Amino acid sequence: MNPAASRTETTFGAAVATTGLGVVTLALFPFAVPILVLTVVALVPLLLPVILLAAAGAIVVLLWLGLRLFGRGIRHLGRPRGGDAPSRPAPVAVPAQETRVAG
Image (spheres, rainbow, N blue to C red):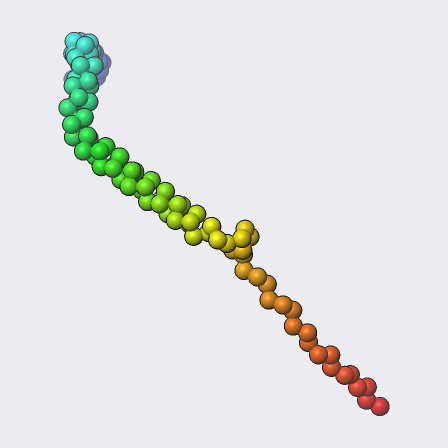
């Protein structure tokens, strides 16, 4: 067995395989874009319920937040501004102790 011939046959086989793959790729390339478009069009009906549920959930959340803010505004109408902060307790006077010096 001649190693040079084996190397030549391997290189030739790789070149033939690469050429074949290139021809197949170039022959099928024009079909790639239509296949992608058809895939997207086929997936839209499957995603439509998810999109509608997300939109309905967003509307519910926005209404809930709006009512919550509206309710807070009504509750705070009678209060003066700045009345929400807790007041500080009055300082307590500590009686002074007598110090006696021994002696």
